[in-house]
Length: 348
Image 1 (cartoon, rainbow, N blue to C red):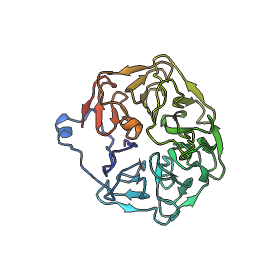
Image 2: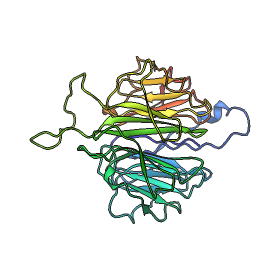
Image 3: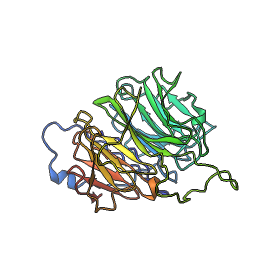
Image 4: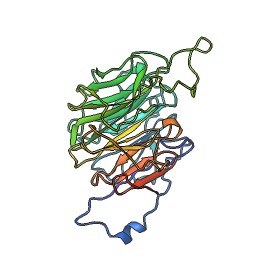
């Protein structure tokens, strides 16, 4: 199964969820693949999709979060969807969600979406979405990432962007008791939040997180700097890439050779079967790849303007196949696939 978690274009209800049965042996014959086409599988609730996740071991079960419509679930691979978050009346904006690989009944939801409404923290379900328990972190406002340790459903990381004004409720929060208590393991100040996080399920102790400037300085007239206000070229962006080697307990910023100075929202993905060495990073400038765990980077096909963030990261995403590290997907206002490690891309 491939989990596709990305921002999609405004006004789009497509959820890109690809569930593939494990092959018995050998490659899939090309004539079989040629008959596959993408189609809209909903949920048909309007707006866009802000988060998706699949339930490992439960074929056809997926969850989708929306910026203003709560959480939806399908058990039929998208043929039918039903809302499962309506009992929570305090918030409907979803920024991130994840299903525990070790226990598909455990689902975590982070509320508040990057460019949408504010949320009120984290929720957990222990019965596959039938009921929900609020786990706190109310002040985080907007949560961009939730990662559950594939070995233990009680170990969870939350990447918080924080509110639109300066505050301290942003960074990476970590819990080892199912959200009963939280420890802030990465904090970069009152204006820098966490946008995205990624792990490889076969090396879950290695975690990557991207950051961005989210608590903007106030202006005397309005109290908040208008979105899109130009900043000087050398102004601090707050954007960076951090790595943890102990499951999110401690972090180190990566500034290796070839990494660009980027701004806005960036996305990151880690390839399985590479000892967490193959990493992809997508920015406003393009797609970058590391083959040594983030020590050095190179830009992939700089001439292809399609494989970069759209609208300054409003639409963004990079994902890598769970079996083949050379198959990588990029998501912006449109979607592309590479089968040669990011050297060339085609639309799909």
